[in-house]
Length: 269
Image 1: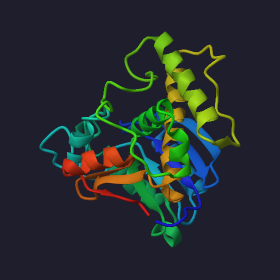
Image 2 (image 1 turned 135 degrees about the vertical axis):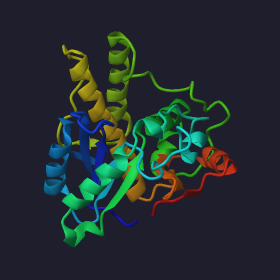
Image 3 (image 1 turned 45 degrees about the vertical axis):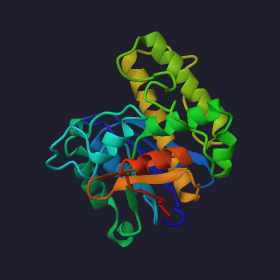
């Protein structure tokens, strides 16, 4: 793939008429240079025109390929991943991802369009992998790119960080958001040139918390993007371009489990 000039991570609202798109833009030097949330699609298109650069990596948190004429709620890649990570079926997004990808490509100047890569991601999977790595004392090894086996059969959907989205109480939401905020700002060696809003001194309703959580998800997407463009061996493309392909993090054990179930695993560079 080569070294990208910037990584544009987009947490996508799965409905077409939405104000739930969020963006985090990172540089290969691990700097989060821009953050925004509460964006509609038109805002997103305008932002793309302003911020896109030659050889940018654009990451979308929404199913993209393999969503036309689905016979099952899930694509093959999700059917395999569901044994290790909780996820929504691709059928819930319909063709939202492929249509948004087309709009974004149209917004990119023709002179650099062919240099830009648009890739599907799943922030929860990124967070879970890094959170478990940290719990096992292996996060530093992952960050340094020391290719190891540290996951095992206990890596199941029930093992996950505290929730910060979904149908949970405001108290649990806040606990989960605070843990994720600390993880992003203290554990991942990121630098924020635009401050990440803290959930510690917050007095906001559910909608404001949801927008903030979207922004955190966009940051998680930027993290896997950074691993991808810097050649970290834990960054993998799971699946295939025709039926669905997701940029994830995996150690030796998880890679072997996914391959044993027929999922193609390849490095994105």
